[in-house]
Structure formats: C-alpha cells, structure tokens
Image (tube, rainbow, N blue to C red):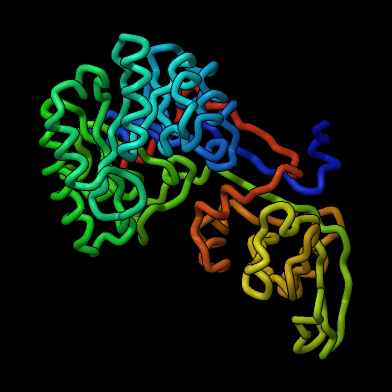
Length: 379
C-alpha cells in the first residue's frame, strides 16, 4: 500500500516530461541515426511500467535490456514491431523461450551464436539477432578472428538475419581519451565484414562524441534519466528524479558532542542537528557518511556522521532556526543537488545512485505534458 504524500517519510518523484525531453534531445544529437532506449535494471530503477510507455509515445522503437527476464517484463508494453534486445545474450537452453516471446538476443560469443543458429535450424526459419564484436573493452563480444570466421560462413546470415552489429565504448565518458577513436576504427573494420547491416556503438557518452560515433543506431541510457555522461556539459540533461525526505527529529548539541554510529562526527561548537528518514536501505550509500549533504530552504546541510540503515543526521545549523521544523522535507535530489553531485560525494557514478534507490519511498510519477519543453542548446 502506498502512503499519501502527507504522511510519507520520503517521496521520490519521477518526471516523465523530463525523460521525454532528454530523449528528444538525444534524437537531435544523434540524427539521422535512430535512437533506442536502454531500460535495463527496471529503467535504471525508475520503473519500466512508466518509462517504456512514455518513450514509446515519444517515438522510441528500439529497447535494450540486460537479461531475458527483463525483456519478458517489457514485451507486453510494446507493439510487436518494436524489438526488445537482450544485451547479455541468452544462457544455454533459453533460446526457445526467447524466440517464442519475440525477444531478440545480442550474440556475444561463439557458444551463443551456435545456440541461436541451432534453434533456427531446428525450426527451419531464420531468427534475427544483433551481433556484438569486441572492439577493445574485453567484456562481451566476438574477437576479431571469431568475427572474421563468422563473416566467411555463407549460412550464418541466412540462418541469423542481423538486426545490427554493435560494440561498446570503454572510455566514452572521457572526451579527450584517444581510445574511443581507436575503438571506433576497430569496430568499423569489423562491421564492414557484414555489408548493409546497421551499426550501433554510441551509448549516452557516445552520442556526445559527434557524428563519427553515431552510425545507424544509438542506444543511450543514463542521459535519458538525467545523468550527465561526460563532464562538464554546457547544458545538463534535465533531472528526471526528485527525492525529498522528512525531518524526524531536531536537537541541539554542544561543542565536542558526537553523533551517529561510532560517534564518527563531533561538533566543533554548538550545532543544531536534524535526523531524516532515509538510509542505506533506501539506497543512500554509506560512503556518503560525513561527505554528502541535503538541502533545506536552499541551504546545504552536511551529513553529520555515518549513514544508518534507516536514517541520516544532518547539520542544519546554517538554516535559520525559525525555518526548520520537525516534519519538514529536505531535498536529497532536486534543483540544488543532481544525481551526479551525489555520485561525486559518494565516490561513485550516477548509474549506481539511480539503480540503488530503494523501494520504501512513496513514489510519484509526473505524466508527460501535452507540450514537453525541450532544450535547444546542445552540449
């Protein structure tokens, strides 16, 4: 049961209008390439049941997930002519299940290729797939030798019509790193072995690297959800997630007083503290202890001590005392603090912040307005 906003301890808001605006911006950046949506990990924790229909209405026709079970979850949300691709491919024995439900695998290894081809032979019908080649990340994909051998096999393209050939950038978030250009060159050399097959290399960061990386299909993820894949951006992507938490208790402490587990924080003078109802069980990482912050009345309130499972202590001394009350909401994600800011304080990346957000929040979804504002200034 979801609590009303008025009695919820914390509220997470998903702004579908901002999501669609980010998608529209990525389409402009990558044009004339088609732009898919990566909706793995429950749309980066925001809920595929909300995200996928919004993107479909905005014109998105291609969707990527990581696991077969994720593909099965979103298949009913999409028309039959919108393909769903499984980035990790299929485990042995899962091929029939995928084919029966209209799921398209990304084939990453010789064994995955063999399993999918064997099903096509048994069924005496071609089965489409995406082929992934390793252009230098050494994670998933066929090696150069394996790719060349497959390209020389005349039966392969008959049994497995290729929806695309793809690879993945290892250093796309670092615009100055020359490895991205080297990967792109390797990728294009391997893709040329399959003439006429659409190519896909650009993730969110790749969309910002320029037309040479866009090819025929881009597949952004984090930028859709308000994360900035490279830093700094002249115009950040619109924040999609907003998070506020309620103040449970206020107290005063004197100079030298400790707070939280292990008394890992000590007051350097008289301070006012507020305990809020979010903790690491809600995805507010413990690495934010004594490093992160929240905002109240636009004023930064540092975390005082360790993040607990269900609560965090904030130093609210800088906020006028008359402006702080038990029951007030403080901003954890919003206009003053983006997911990239939190990630920096936590020593991680925005992906981990988003996908860690827990299920105890009261969740609100803002629908797409009839006219969604879009950003005209590109990075």
